[in-house]
Image (cartoon, rainbow over all chains, first blue to last red; front, side, top):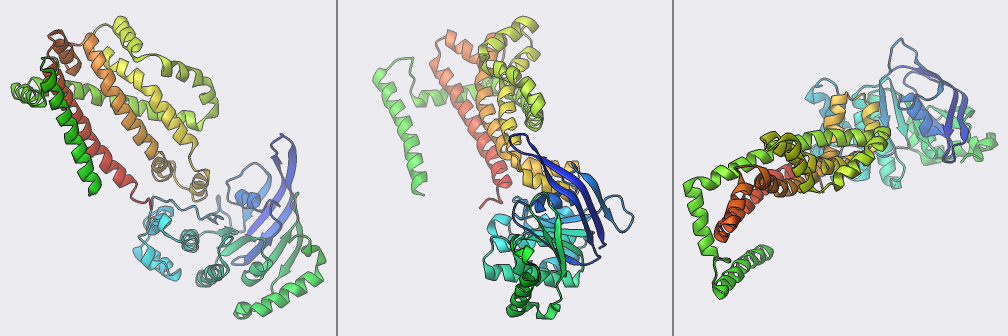
Length: 245
Length: 246
């Protein structure tokens, strides 16, 4: 639970015909402590690349990722687009496995309970619906109490009611256990529903087009009209955003 | 239930056909199942069969273990490292294609008619298969899960036992099954050519005496042991490892 500075001077990638392209150049982001930030950008603009860099899965870049507290390696809770649960471990074992020392049973119980997964805790992932698997992967990320939570379009390919349900559970969990969240999506409505702040990104080389605070109070976020109004207003005021979506 | 009845029926049909043929031919070269069972019992009682079967089993366990451990280690290494794989690929192709008999003869010629030469010959025959199977398994590892393990700071040990090994398990089991089948067959030839005990040696002896009843009795003991390994060891291992499958 801390803020983070992200400064990526240069990130290149090599295409299949061995051409070098720039994916990210001079990207500066500051994430405030316990803020929910949504990155919005078109597919293929390098959002996943950015998350992989922050998660230390990709070291091939120039720049710096720094927490605003002195620490060698930030703890990252990464929620991938696919849940990436171990199929040979039950829901509970999947969560236990990311915890280093055996946390109390109660701790895991409370997490499972907050996502309505208590009765499925001994099920294997193949027996779960996609929505449930996504919830498990969210719990797994929260369980390690990370400095920052990365979410890579975790609600994509869910049907709208399920997506809404999982979004609500996520918000509930986040309000109980505040964390700094970096959430990637290309769905502007979803971003407005979830975020404190929106960051719009352009196609490669990735750069920040604009940063906008979502001013709708949290209590009113369930009102779809309020979300839609905000979206319309946003698109009218920032016509350049329209081209991204 | 129906399938079980059917397979039981087909088993007895096979015995019946054998019995019918034996009576029809009425010759020492094809004894009846009853006679074979009597011989089997005599051999067990005299202690001859358990002794030789035990020796062969011991050779099997030793050579199988060495081949599996080395083969898994080499296979995983090759699967993980493209450069090493490219370097050793030719070797592997050559070893895969050397006939078992050639390896056995060469081992006996170079190292003498000793126990370690026999084991070595079996191991050399088996290892390339294990390597190839495990290399395929390692190449097929799920990169997404490995990334997950890295991002959650799994230790190397944890990654191996909880992320990699369960994915390799089907390949290890495939190598085990094909390995046992192969080693059983090779080990008999090894014994026949250069040992003075074990099933292969006994079969050689019976062959010289034209004692078909004893040959068949040993064969039956053999089949029973292999099925026993499958049912008592391999099947439960499979079941335990795959309980998560839908």
